Amino acid sequence: MNDLYARHRRVLPDWLALYYDQPLEITHGEGRHVWDAQGNKYLDFFGGILTTMTAHALPEVTKAVSEQAGRIIHSSTLYLNRPMVELAERIAHLSGVPDARVFFTTSGTEANDTALLLATAHRRSNTILAMRNSYHGRSFSAVGITGNRGWSPTSLSPLQTLYVHGGLRTRGPYASLDDSAFIEACVEDLKDLLGHTRPPAALIAEPVQGVGGFTSPPDGLYAAFREVLNAYGILWIADEVQTGWGRTGDHFWGWQAHDRNGPPDIVTFAKGIGNGMSIGGVVARSEIMNCLDANSISTFGGTQVTMAAGLANLSHLLEHDLQGNARRVGGLLIERLRAAAAQDPGVREVRGRGLMIGIELTRPGTDEADPDRAAAVLEAARAGGLLIGKGGGHSTSALRVAPPLSLTVAEAEEGAAILESALRSTQ
Image 1 (spheres, helix red, strand yellow):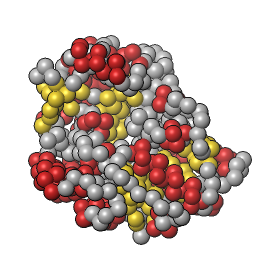
Image 2: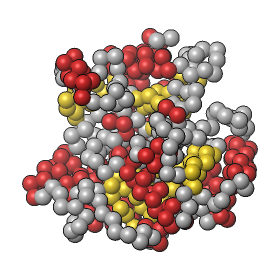
Image 3: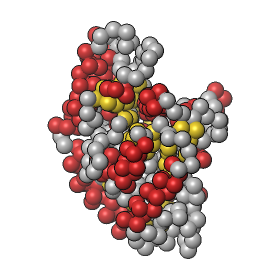
Image 4: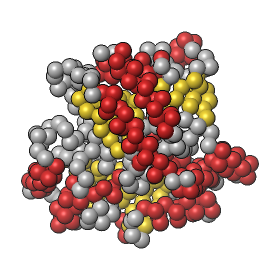
C-alpha cells in the first residue's frame, strides 16, 4: 500500500484528496460490504460518494454490463442507441417534468454544466442564483456557482453568480426563526436580491446539500421561491445528483418536498443511477432542451454499456422498493444515531432523511466546527470496520452517512454501534 501511495503522489495532483492517514485501496465489494488490499472487510456507509446506490456487485447490473460489453460497448450519440432511448423513456416518465427530454452525460458535474448552458441560452442571461453552502461539481462553470469555499479553487467564472439564503437551516442570520418565519425571511431576501440585478437565468439548488454536510431547508422553501421566480420568468434547476432515485426515503426526487408550485424546469441527475457506472444527465421541458441553435453531441454520454447498467439498476430499485427501504431503515438508523449522540457534547446536530444522514461536529461548549475530530472519527470508524464520509461548508464539519439503499436493519444496527464507539473514543 505504501508503494501504491507513493506512486499516487508522484503522478496524480496534490489536490486530489484521499481519506485516512493510511489511504485505503478497495479491491472488491458485495452487497453493503467492501474489502481492502489487505483483506480487511468493511461495512460501506458511503457507497463511493453515494454512487453505489443499490449494492456492490449487484448481480442484475453485473449481468447487464457483461452481456452488453459482449455485444458493443460504445458507438457515440451519432447513432441510434436502443438502451439509451429505453432509459431516457423511463427517466422522462419518472421525472415529473412535463414534455420531458433527457440528455445523458458522464457525470453530475457535466450534467450541471449542461443545465447551466441550457438555462443561460434559453433565458439569454449569464446570471445564476445559487445557494450558499452549495456544491455542484468540478468544471469551470460548476465551480463558479458553488457556494462552498472549500471546493471553489478560483473566483473566475463565465457566469455572474448571486447567492441566496436558505440551504443551511441551523446556521446563518435566520437560524433562530421557526420554519415558517425562516421561509418567509429567505423569500424576502430573494425578492430584495432580485431588485438589485437584471433577471437571472435560473436558480440552481440541491434539495439536500450533499458536500455541504447533508443540510436542507424546511419543506416548501423552493416552492415559495418558485412563486417569486415565476414572476420574473426565472427557471428552477433541481440538482438531484445526490438526492435522486429515492435516497431521501420520503420522495423519489428531493424536489418533491417542495412541489406545491409544480416540478422544476430542469432536473440534473447522476451518481446512483449507474450504481458505480459513469452516468449523469439532464431532464428538461422540450422548449428548454431544444433551445440550442448549434450542433451538439456527447461522445461518451449514453454509451451502451452504461445505459444497460442504468436500466438494470433502475429496474432493481423500483421492483424491490428501495425507496421504501430507505425510508424505513433510514428512519431507524437516524434515531439510533441521535440516541448515540445525545450524550456527546461535541455533536451539534444529527439530521437528514432516508439514507442521507449528517452528523455535525463542533468543539464542546461552542458553535465552532471541529474538523480534526471529524477526521478522527473517520479513522476510528474505519478501525472498527465502517466507512463513512465527511463534509461541511463555511465554519462547519459533518460526518456523512449514506449507505446503499438495500441496507438491512441488522447492518444499520451494526454500523450505528461502530459509529457510536468511534464517537465515544474521540471525545
